[in-house]
Length: 290
Image (cartoon, rainbow, N blue to C red):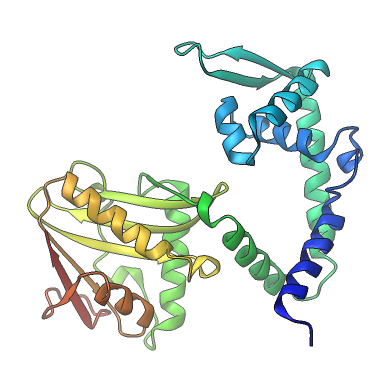
């Protein structure tokens, strides 16, 4: 039986080989992986040099060399930021856009070919999601979003589907006290989405009424990110938003089938209280006062 460290190192070697990390011509396009990744970041809308450097984890010297090589090829243009001379921004040239599109097509084809190697496609994707979440844990960001946005709707759809699987009686959102979107935007409340490298992996809503009392709604964390502290981060962000809005009392409800949720609330300062609504699904009720 291989020990854990040996298994991790085997995985690292397999990924390094599969993605061509050591190739001098990544994906056969004539430049190494580092330059290709910078081009990819710019193509996906990451324009400021500092943001690209932070996103890819590059030091200033290497970043400068990679940008210079892409400029020499005529793939990007770098200019001084309009409002801050200390900052620089990048954009793709027409040639750079064609090269970016070529990388995208090859990468998508490579991903489809990889998935075709295994008969358990969903299990393979779930394993990859878990690994990516663990590796990218420190890069997961929280931001306020419109609860009607695509990212929010994705999270809510996944949340409702999970409740339907885990509740004995199933779950129908039409029977639940589903909050109105206008109650989860400022100045009444907020909706917070967690993003991991462009993909939504969690959410939480703060449903307000304009007064001192509000509710926490729709806390969801993607299965692949559980155990990394994201649920607690989302709750802390929602509580901080409540304080900013002058809310002094928060309530929430949950179902005992969601044991991890109840544990989170009990260990983060929430107190169990009697039922405060007629929603048919929850059987546990909590409150926190500031």
